[in-house]
Every structure is written in structure tokens, then in C-alpha cells.
Image 1 (tube, helix red, strand yellow):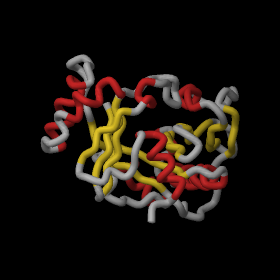
Image 2 (image 1 turned 90 degrees about the horizontal axis):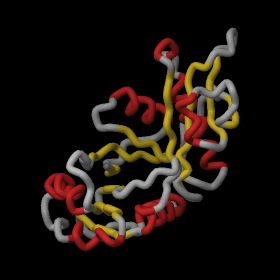
Image 3 (image 1 turned 60 degrees about the horizontal axis):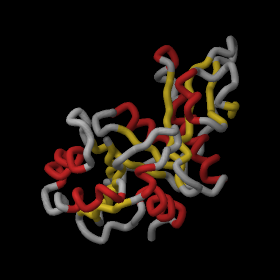
Length: 219
């Protein structure tokens, strides 16, 4: 049974869930509206063992559906053209994870407004509060987590660690800490990464985001 929060997140974010067949193309107004960072993302998709939903702008849905009977790799290769995008755009697939029970480990950071002077520039676009870890002796920034607040039901976590602070387990502790807050606020935390990003995969697993065979698609 799919968690209700995750179900509502996928329906809100994509326009439909579940797929009900190997590949479903959905026209959603969300693909024409600003996302968490103010940018417009003309294609977003999620694949699970039961099928894949690809969300595109409504005016382009019919052109994308024409390709839907092709193998997924061929479909993704031709999709940017069907969406009327320039030749340089490419579709990609990544690992989609979510957590309902983050690992219980000591908190590693503090929540601060994203525009606090201590917060590094890469965390500013996330808005709201961000989670950062600082050196206990110097107060210098070491690592942080921003939240992509896609909707009221699903929030995606992004983590970054300064090179000098890696190997201390900060990222996994911060991700678990942030995931607990997202759950406490009534949403489900998600975590996305490239298939070949083994470091990010290890952080996710350690924080309580298991590999479930789900995929995220984007441009």
C-alpha cells in the first residue's frame, strides 16, 4: 500500500499516479508553471516497478504519446524534439528514493533562514529554513541540506559537504535529521541522485532512503 503522502505528492507533481501500464504520458499544467526554484521544468517523470508516468505540458502531450509505444530509451531520446525543445536538451534518468522511517542518529546541524549570513550561496535558492553543520570550534560552515518544496505532500532533500569535511558522516546525519522534520510537517521526504553517484547512494542508504527500484526522469 503506497503511503498517502507519497501518492498525493506524485499525483500533484506529475498529474497522475499510478501508471497502470508500462508508460503513460500525462499533460499537466505543472509543467508550464514555476517550480520550487522559480524555473519551469517541461518534463518530469517517475518510474516504479508497476510502470512509468511522464508529465509534459498539455499542448505537447499528444505529440509525446505518439512515441509511447517505443522502448523507453528511444522514447526519452526523441522526447525533447516532441516537446519542441532545442536540440541540446537531453532526457535523463536517476534514482528516486523516499523514506518513511529515517535512521535514528544524532542531529548534526541547526536550522537557519536561508538568507542568514552564515548560509553559503548554494543553499539560498531553496528558500525557507535550511539545515547546516558548522565546525564547533570555528563556526565555519561544513555541510548543509536544502529542501525542494515541490508541494504540501513531498519535499526533496539536497545535501552538500565541503571537501575538507567529508568522511565524517555529516551528510547522512543531516539528511536523516532533515527527513524527520519533513515527516513531522506532514510531507514525505524524497532523495534523488544520478545512478553512478555512489557517494550520494551511500548517504541515502545510511540515512534511511532504501533503493526500491524507482527512477526519476527529467531534462
